[in-house]
Image (cartoon, rainbow, N blue to C red; front, side):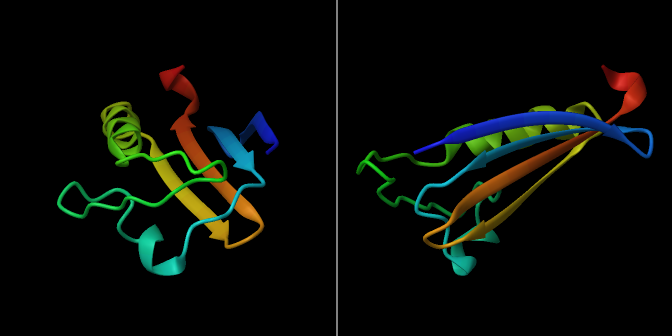
Length: 90
């Protein structure tokens, strides 16, 4: 699996993107990724397991800093997480 991280400045915001070419995330799971009361456990590219706690923590940190986090994914083609922060936060 390949992982790409990039950052840019646009429209007064820092944008950080983390992309992979893994197995992707099914549409029905994307809307539940950041909900603490919804548990999602699926095997990853190398059958690794996770409970999604890391994503919940990331969302909490991003929210506290006035930013947003979003995800785009296509099964079989990978996932991109985008984090946006106001310029004056960093």
